[in-house]
Image (cartoon, rainbow, N blue to C red; front, side, top):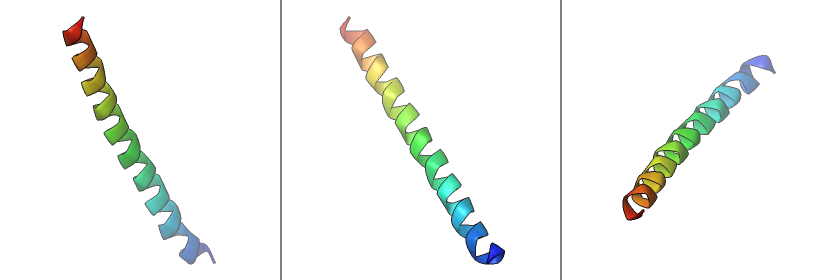
Length: 38
């Protein structure tokens, strides 16, 4: 059982990190655009 669940856990963690990275980049771009308009 352990060998079956480990890769899934790693994939889930990797997906979360990737999603957070894209979200941070998007948020920074949004903040920069807002800063430009002000």
